[in-house]
Amino acid sequence: MASRRRGTAVRTTLTLALGALLLAGCDTASGVADPVATPVPDAVVQDGVTCPLPENGTGTPTPTLPEAGRVPDGFTAVAAVECPVNATVTDADGLWSVVEEVRYSGDLTRLLAALSEPDDALPPNVACAAYAELVPPLWLVDARGRAILAHWPLDECSHTKAGVAGALHDLTVASRKTTKVRLITPRAALDAACETGWKLEPPSSHATTAPPDAPSTAVDAVRVCRYDVDPAQEIDIADGTPIAVGTFSSGGELVGDDVARALALPGEGPLAPSCTTEPTRFAVLLPVLGEDTGNPVWVELDGCRRTWTEESTPRTAPPSCSRSWPADPCPATPPRRAA
Image 1: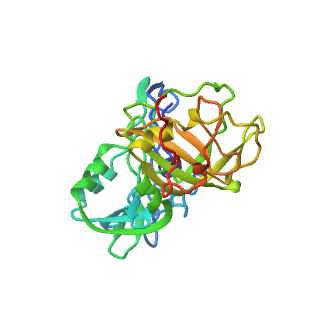
Image 2: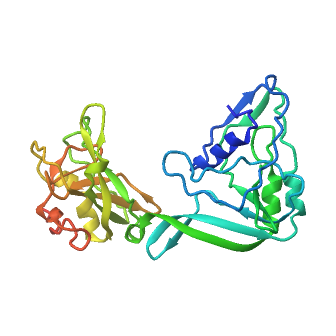
């Protein structure tokens, strides 16, 4: 249900903690219990602007921001500073999470008017779309460098009104300060289009011993992503079977004849014997179909050295699969000749 609260503390936490929009249809809310919007107090003047670091997985941004509020009497803003949410940059090292401070200059009349609008009360039996917004912290700065954290006025569904965003769009971006915080995806993983981490999903208990279907002719290539198992990330599941998790080490792409050979791996070798040796490295094969990827093929590069899909029983991978991909593609054996 869309929240009927107008408290800015709740608003700030919701704004900064969520990493994506969560769309969930509509909800009908009664306004009987909250017929009038709660007034928003004036913001407390701070020594300067603070843009929070990306949240660290706890849902709490750092540092903690002050309460957002209205522009107090006597505070004369000369600029606005926005702190974009979930900002990233890409450079030679890869994809980074960053803290950005975007400073706007120009005539602030329209922005100040939009910020002064009251929050709307929730009328009875209104249908509200239930989603969470990613609203960036917005500061107003005076000539002395002091700042206040501004409250974005809310409509009857507790969603931000359009006026503030529109007013910011009409201002001039005077400067943009970007500070790198954490490397999200190394350049090698970006270039190989591989995830930085992957779970080594154990074979399904419902898998069949029959070889999987022949690879589709629609497959353009096979993406190869190689991972080193990180014991610290091992996942324990209910039945006691641990799931290994790997971190990206190298990647590449197989094309031509190697496509069919790679996708045939789970159906060509003998059924794998019982084995409990944990791998220290594995690879994931992803069929590339235009802009999409198909179901993965897992290959243990050491340990039991098995290969399987989500629907097939593990089979023994050929010896060439113990090599490092893609410098030494696996498999390297020639295709079978017709009888």
